[in-house]
Image (cartoon, rainbow, N blue to C red; front, top):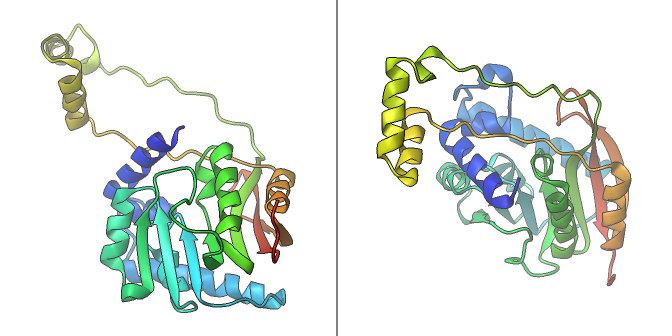
Amino acid sequence: MSLKELQGNWNLFGKQDPLWAIATWPDKKGNRWKLDEFFALGQKEVDEVLEDIRKLGLVFSRGRALDFGCGVGRLTQALAKHFTQVVGVDIAHSMIDLARRYNRHGSDCRYVLNEVADLRQFPEDDFDFVYSNIVLQHMEPDYSKAYIREFVRVLRPQGVVVFQLPSRCTVPPAPPTVPSQSASESDGTAGGGIKQMVKQVLPDPLLKWYRDLRYPPEPMMEMHCVEREEVERVLAAEGATVVEVKEDSFAGPGFQGFRYTAIKKSGFRA
């Protein structure tokens, strides 16, 4: 899936069921998340992550933090309680719009759209802390590895990066299913006849508009893995020292995943 396709899918999630798309609890599907409950979940996560970093003995500045794949700002706002300024980036216009609407921290939280396969809008050595959770797993490995390189580039020396990524799938993929054709969709019925008539009359762009109007497109949430050894190679090549690799279950059942914590070396240049 290209970045453009990824953006299209997450724009749809942002319009249809944005909070569930980020925290996919089965009983919250259908816009059932309560905002306070949703953002409290993010605060708990960030507090626990920073406490784990403290226990590792890592000391770093609490100036600027980057939340990569910020969605509606669940973790961005949580980070604002620990850092002077936090920047949330996301690929979906709809998510950024909601993040700005829900923002409770004024200029301490800034949300920006990022539509390219890098973080070129941020200079080198710009952030003290970079965090990303349940984001890299939804993109092709070439993209996720490129962003990991960028995480290190935008970190200041001695800055810390923490991110999660599944390493491998532990269950075989389900066989593909072929949608069944209902009677109204077949050519031999009244419904099929109308559909066929529309097909003959409308040019392709209008036909797509007609189909989307009658049958709104369903966004797709892909899952991808990158082997632990490959992730560690990427970090080392960019000048980051891996401090901890911890088993992580955020990818859900059927995946073996890890949370990576690394620190950028001072003065390293490849």
